[in-house]
Length: 179
Image 1: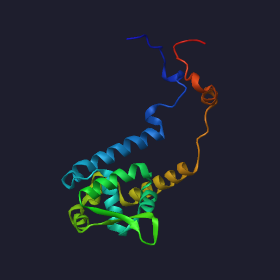
Image 2: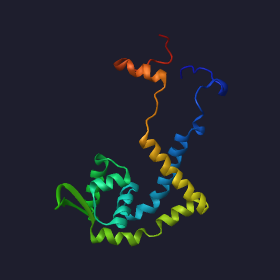
Image 3: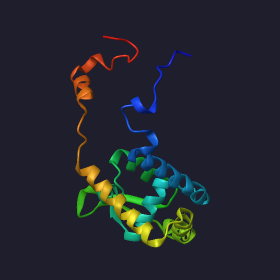
Image 4: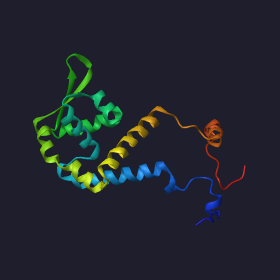
């Protein structure tokens, strides 16, 4: 194993991983998604498929564009997901007769019946999250606000990265070498 440079917490120029918001969000997202896995397994649904089904149970027929927007997914991610649900007989896709450019997604009777089987999943997840109702709601609202802020903004590139990006094809220098 190559020698590692010695560092101490005092000379590390970045915040610790466990102090960063991005890591807390990543870890929470993975934990919650993993919490859903055994609950969705009997339905043979992945978490993104479950989100599509929930949206259709809530709203009924939707355009693919509306599903993308509501779930914050791009077409490249959503299309294969919809094809798998359609192949299982849970939904139908078809052109909107009012606008041939638009594709509509609707539950089949089998997809609609699955709703009964999924009842209780949100409550089971809420129980496992185990936050008081007020804190649960304030956290949900803060996360929605955070998502909106991030989607509406752009991170300022640190000067060293901007200089590196300006170098183009040369790429990142090896931190172990001196140029």
